[in-house]
Structure formats: C-alpha cells, structure tokens
Image (tube, rainbow, N blue to C red):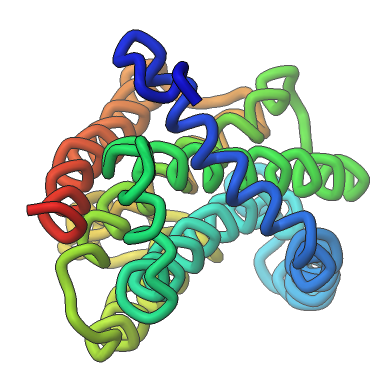
Length: 265
C-alpha cells in the first residue's frame, strides 16, 4: 500500500486503474468476440466481395486496387474510431454518476489523473488487440501489400486514442447521456460514411474535398491505407499523424482537468 502513496511511483497508480478495467473485461470479453472477430469478416465479405464485384464490373479498379482491397484498411480505421467512442461516453458517465466506481477509486490513493490515464491505457490495449485481429483478417483477404502494414495495429491505437481522449474529457462534464446520441447520429455516423471510407477523396466534388480533409476519421483512413499499400507522400503521412496525435494530446490535457473537477473539486 505504501508504494501507491509515493509520488515517485505514480506510474504504479494508473497501472492499478488499468488492471481494474482488465480484470472486469476478463469476465465480459465474450460479448465483444463478435465485434472483434466476426464483424471484420462479415464487412469485408459483404462490402468487399459483394459490392466489390459490382464495382469491378462497372468501373474496374479503385486507385489501382480492387474494391475489397481499397476498403479493407478503412474498415480497420472506422472500427478503431467506434471502439474509442463506445468505451468513452456511456461507460465513463456510468462510472461517474450511476455506478460511481470512479468516486470509490478517487477515495483511495488513486488520483483522478490515475483513473483517467488507466482508462485511456485500457482503451488503447483493447484497440491494439482489435487492430491485430483486423490486420490478420484483412491479410487473409490479400489486402496487405507492404511491410508497413505491420504498423496497422499501432495506427488503430492512435485513431482510438484520438477519439477516446477528448470523449472521456467531455463525458466527465455532462450530467446526463442526452447529448451522446446526438453526437453519435450527427458526428460518428456521417464520419463513418463520408471520410473517404468507401470511395476515394476524388469522388467528392472539388468544393467538398477540403471539408472532408478536416474530418478526423479521414486522417485515420488515409493513414491506414498508406500503411496497407505502402504508398503515400511522407508529407501527407506526417500531416495525418500530427492531426491524430494533436487530438489525443489535447484530449489528455483537458480530460485530466475535467475528471479532477468532477471527482474532487
């Protein structure tokens, strides 16, 4: 117990918060098997093979790729975004207001920052595992063409953190979940559909392309495709990385403050 009180061992405190989430997941993991393993297969089979057959018949290749290969990396990116959203809105509000286990944790030597970082690290851990499974699945479909594709699980982690960090920060400020469905309907669903996920950026009218390039998920999709195919200008890749890293960093800075304000101040 003494080590948790020692400020020099702060890493140990947030690791205990991470362990709480891991231990909880050990009892509930069966419910996520479908979304982690079967959904990528179903999506790729339905869209990549089914729709892809129609696309190939009428337009041929998409940016030099079959339609299945074209959408496979983008589905990894959208899944990473959805994981960040799903782990960071209702679960966080529940832990603060309904179940109140964050209040219980804050009554121990854990600081709100430890609770926040432990949660964020756990979300990243889940994203890494999901990214590995997705990468294996899309490799089985022949959609990986470069050794850079080995970085896809890490890209999935970055995408998840870019969404999860600010969403946890936001969830710590609200009193009800009324706004969550609004965010889902008017932010996440449009992002899923209109981030060059299912068709290239060039398919958009010229005046809409700059708008699409400001959408956070677009940067994750573009980064995943660049890694899967081993193509893309380094300047563009660095821009995508910087955008997602900036989202995650800002989210962490704000989230540590909002959670402390909610639990302690």
